[in-house]
Image (cartoon, rainbow, N blue to C red):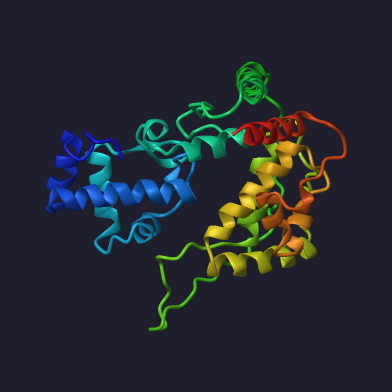
Length: 292
């Protein structure tokens, strides 16, 4: 937290709205930033419910009032795509957040490109080209959408019934709303959203078979116990797309609980079949670490 943040008028406003001392308001904001750096690196905290956000920072008051207070005081903003994002997260987050987003070619939720000050000029050049290419594809896709002629309306196709999401029960026997919920359909949707955002996508299965659903259900049970593993799973998908690992299919990433963790952390699945841009990045990072 910047040294002038505790005395900022927005901090006084947050304390006033919640009717708490200013030092408590400072603790709330600091806890929110630390939690977002781990579970919402782009600043898109709206991926979680209000209750999950409040629980994540240890706030035991009314979750909706907390979010409303953060909105009114200007520390978070509403967003059409992400629901809620941290205001100026690009300026407030730690350097490791910038490095993590840069190495996976991920934009901040507000559209900013991560800073790459600690990377070598060689790596920055490669990553900058990747970010620019991604931006050009986005603009082209938007233009094509605006300029394209309307397509004929397809016949309605009934969608398969989604699997019910089972809420974990607390000790009293009631559903615990503070814990995130996961379903096979959520994993399937997340995999394809990440996959479709890259220029060289993975092998994309469009038929959600019973076999895939059963394997995804096992991962959902695991994520219910440790929600932070879901972010690691998403990181593995993004990394597989960035490195062009077409064999990292949805079925592969759901098959065994250790495969996606090893891929996200850079384990034995880090090998590349041929020398590519990501390999050049890895070599450059290695040279940079040796020089330090």
